[in-house]
Length: 219
Image 1 (cartoon, helix red, strand yellow):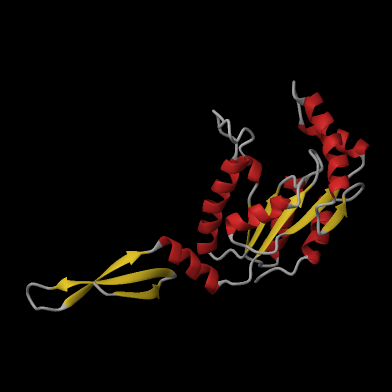
Image 2 (cartoon, one colour; image 1 turned 30 degrees about the vertical axis):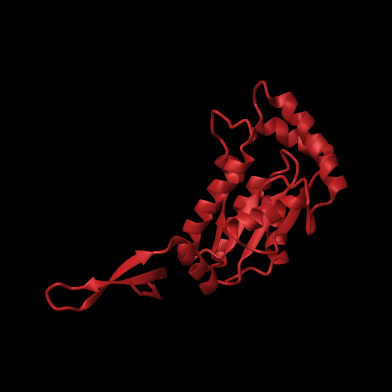
């Protein structure tokens, strides 16, 4: 059989010429969707993409700001996808090799982003704590978007504790309070970000607007 590759309806199709028809002797093509080539074709059709990671300590408002940013981008007709990575890891039982579900979340992210790309999305927004320089590249490799951008949200200790207490109700409150302050200090020291946005005394829309104007979004 002889392969011939073409793009049909945004799918990379490999035509394999079958044996001759027993009736007329004509060779008939058989279409096979090649998944890896299909993904590559999508990237080539949309070569400019953006990956924004919104980082910050527990309670700073990463998901809330990302959701508002998504609303603003939709109003501006910017093709994008907002995915809360934490929600992709809520699974039990947990794998001993992946106790916090980070690997699972990234695997799920890869699949979801591929589906969103097929529907025209060109920008990916992911709220997630970024503690190491290697993590943004790990996410970028998983979704095949180079040059990830990290925005770190900041807030005073008092603001963080107030927000955590508004959000968390129950036995985990003290853990979240402690973790929020620890992360705030650790992220400040690590300084893994392209730019920072202060959140104290500002509205959600004001914060999201600043982030939106900072990025050269793909359209």
